[in-house]
Length: 290
Image 1 (cartoon, rainbow, N blue to C red):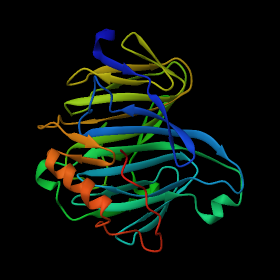
Image 2 (cartoon, rainbow, N blue to C red; image 1 turned 90 degrees about the horizontal axis):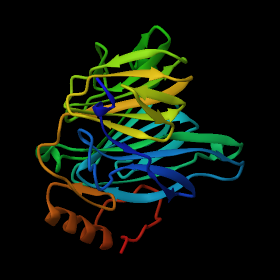
Image 3 (tube, rainbow, N blue to C red; image 1 turned 30 degrees about the vertical axis):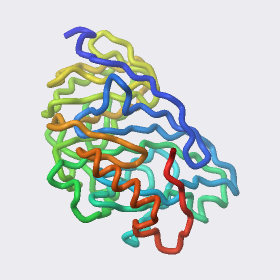
Image 4 (cartoon, rainbow, N blue to C red; image 1 turned 180 degrees about the vertical axis):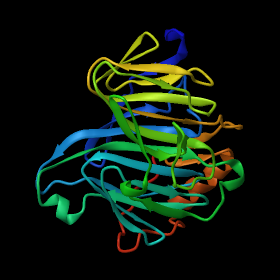
């Protein structure tokens, strides 16, 4: 295979969230989704000084599941179900919005007391149409129970789905996958996920994907039914993600995802009129963007 195995390379746009900058990679005009992944932010790496913190105020979601994964640091999740969970590197927080949920993402009091790095990925996965209005839910899966992946010169962790003969215990509403992989210099890894669509995001380092150089900060969206060989040009950290093709298009506005424009309009009205349940103990309110 040649570099033709890459359908699109995306370098992302900087965006401020809660006091620090992220690189927004999905969605873009030429690629609205990869499998069920409709949103991908690369947070940091950033050093927060003692006394500083991440403060993403309570905000709503419908029709999606959020997947939070950290390389460094920690984030304290709170939601309208009453969930309170601090996430650390290698763990996975999966929040299913369904018919509606509100959550905040902040630095804990303990983490604010010291200098620390924050570095990770925030992803949204569109729920299948038949599950868009399911009751909201939240699950936390610690790193210790996630499958290890390894080969000569590389190792990693399977967060969601199936890859390299392993299957994650994280339960999802549809078929999608996500894995974090660390590789030494000059190592080749063939990747043939059993899904319609996939993309490779280089977090640190540099990869050669079937003859095309992919630098850090670039999301390489692969052609359908991917079958590629990744070769590291130096020590590299990358993630691979994807899933089965969404059978229907998704509409997005702010934090709302749905197969129905009318449903999004109703969610906008519900948020403006403060009909969503709030995060217990947090009365902060983020106005609907105009």
